[in-house]
Image 1 (cartoon, rainbow, N blue to C red):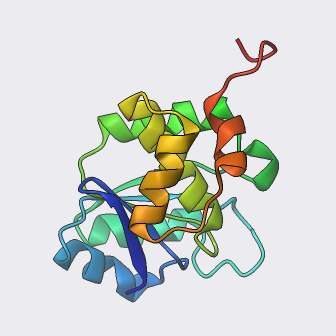
Image 2 (cartoon, rainbow, N blue to C red; image 1 turned 180 degrees about the vertical axis):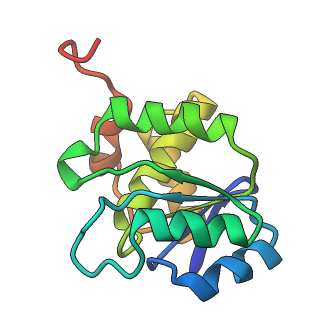
Length: 147
């Protein structure tokens, strides 16, 4: 299974999981699956509703937190960080390819750990993620319009 561990509580899946992957995630020790894909997104293998059923059947918690590329904001990342703190870990987070999940995962990690974009980028590199500080910065600094 292709996944990248950000820390002991959060890993990014570089693929949208299918029904058979849920039991593998449970056996690997994950407690929660977070789906960032929007319903009906191109290439969807499982609808969010079907994915929720498969995840729960495997004994895991499920969160559907849809994020489109324009929604990669500090407010969305902070919102996800708050939700992640309420869910049992470790958590596997996914989108279609792992890109949004990597950005949201690292930004949420930074919010939870009071880190800046540089520290989050370093964490990403240590984990094997190719994310730049320029990509993460807007997700960590709330604009005056959002404040």
